[in-house]
Image (cartoon, rainbow, N blue to C red; front, side, top):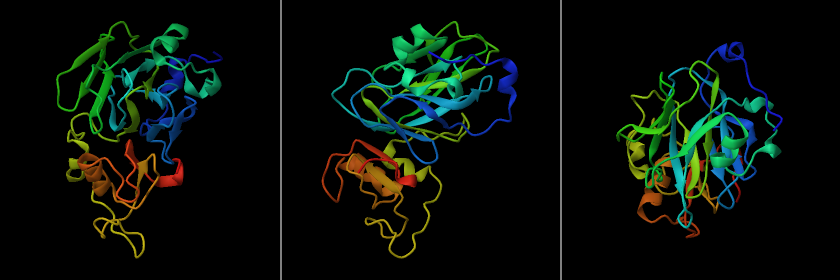
Length: 257
């Protein structure tokens, strides 16, 4: 696959906030400008994404599911890999992390149980000291997904925005403080929305800045709190009435109109 395994010395760089790797991603994935949101814009596969750095020992990867699309079988896959995405040509990525990438490389991943990756769910996953891949959804019980992961070797997080999962967002929070609310109630847990300048306010509340994009129609006239409420209430854009598949940040304008 043209990928290189990283030595342990390479993994000792100063830790930084987890983001998605900008280049190593499936052919149907688009990232926002901050590389914290990944959106699969077509079909149900080719949605593999990686963390931009190795995950520290016992560090928990926390993400929020932003979009859910019915009609497919199966959803989000999570796990870890020895592949360094900096040395991984994007065209060489297979369409699926399970089983394709697992069979081609030292990668360990699993699908979350049915119904555990709906829009608004917060998913946390990590490797234990005994080499077990575990996950937790919202405030639910710990889930054992895989055994036999290497302990002490550099591991990058790998996620597959597959099937019913349409978009995910990496969260910069600790394992004990990540939000557990449903998406349209998340505004109570999120930092205060910025107040808008004249002409840039949300068309619903007329107070906060319009900073959120509805997918797939692309309208960006809403603050994130109002957008999540609309998604939960009707799942239709108030401007064009298209069905909403995901709610994503509007930074950078990388999502299709």
